[in-house]
Amino acid sequence: MKPKLIIKFLLTYLFFGAAGFFAVATLSSRLTYDYLTRSRSRTLYDEASLIASTYSTVYEGSGMDLANAYPQLRAVSTYLQAQIWVMDRHGNILVDSDGKRDGDIIPGFDPTATGNRSYMTGSYFGSFSYPVLSVSAPITGNYRTYGYVVIHLPMERVQDSANEILNIVYITFLIVFLLSLSLLLTFSLAVYRPLRAVTEGARRFAEGDLSYRIPVDSHDEMGYLADTMNRMAERLERAEDDERRFIANVSHDFRSPLTSIKGFLEAILDGTIPPEMHEKYLRRVISETDRLTKLTQGMLTLTSLDADRGLRRSNFDINRVIQDTAASFEGQCLEKNIRLDLSFAVEHEMVYADLGRIQQVLYNLIDNAIKFSPQESSIDIQSYEKHGKVFVSVKDRGCGISRKDQAHVFDRFYKSDQSRGRDKKGTGLGLSIAKEIIQAHGENIDLISTEGVGSEFIFSLPRAEASLP
Image 1 (cartoon, one colour):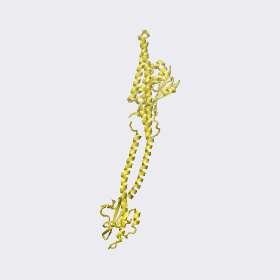
Image 2 (cartoon, rainbow, N blue to C red; image 1 turned 90 degrees about the vertical axis):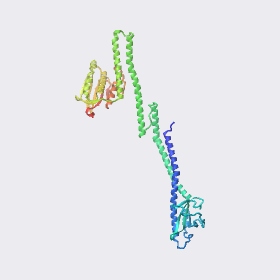
Image 3 (spheres, helix red, strand yellow; image 1 turned 180 degrees about the horizontal axis):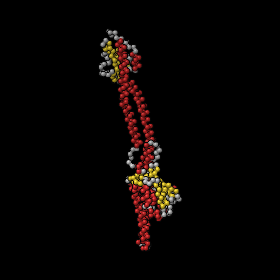
Image 4 (cartoon, rainbow, N blue to C red; image 1 turned 30 degrees about the vertical axis):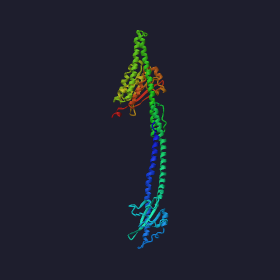
């Protein structure tokens, strides 16, 4: 199993802390120690030079009493926490601030051993059993060097000062480390938990559980991602429901005419239907076949609209299209004695749309209105311009649509109970096709209906002058 993201962050954080501590404990420690060594050496050299200058001022030409020339030597030694020697040129200790090495000779004494530095570290020619920081300043007079003032500071003092500074550095590092830990915990609460919830949601969606919803309520990018995935799952779930309903409806609508066709043909073949009735039932078979053809054609139309919403737009007169489409229903209107009343705000209303698709919308709406209009009624078809768009209305005086069914009239294969009782040849795709075509144009189609009064479908189209490039 791959490590989780929070574990990766924690391991990275611990590595960073360990690496940082190692850097502080080694590099910073060494740099601090060297810096304090140089700083203390400068301070001690200044003191040694001051003492050496005092000895130089008491020089009288023939000789000097180096042992008594600087009585404050012990006080300065105490202040500096160091040991001060006054030596002659040959390495003899004339004065020791501690009073323990007076008269001692330093074997191998070489005042030039420091090179280009003003200090040296070590045992100072084997004089100490522990490391010391030693600085020396010459005592001069009349262009001669009479001796040296040497100050020895135990390196332990330098190390103690370095430790004090490093303790401050360690405490600062610990504070930064704890602040970083709080940042990691904040990240875990503010980012990782929502990310884990989104990951869990993605896993559930991938396994097919589209009813799951990601519980993220933040208003940042993570919340937006969770909300987007929830809406995606909702739409996929709705699509699955639509697919199941689509298959069920297709099966139902195909099964009914196929059952009728099969029953009529079997009855003809086995002699149940006498020869003189064959023509009647063959016509019913043709009618059911026409219904299957319309159903198949409607499904192909919806499939083409789903697959490719490319429209062949052009400028045309919508009033002329309404007139031509209405004329094609003359036979059906005569059968039911229905009158189509056309009303146009202007003689010519130019729109910019797909002529063939809009004809199909008009055909479906008028056909639907005629099916649900009673005998000897009228259907109003209007066109008018409003707010820069052209609106087309098809209004019947039929049975109307209940409020419950109005929310589903544009669903594929949907038929209300009234529709199934009156529209035996319908496929339930006409209004779905009309809506798909209008939405492909970037427009809307609406329904106004009252039970027992009638229904009105209104759709909009862009005017020609507003859509031309």
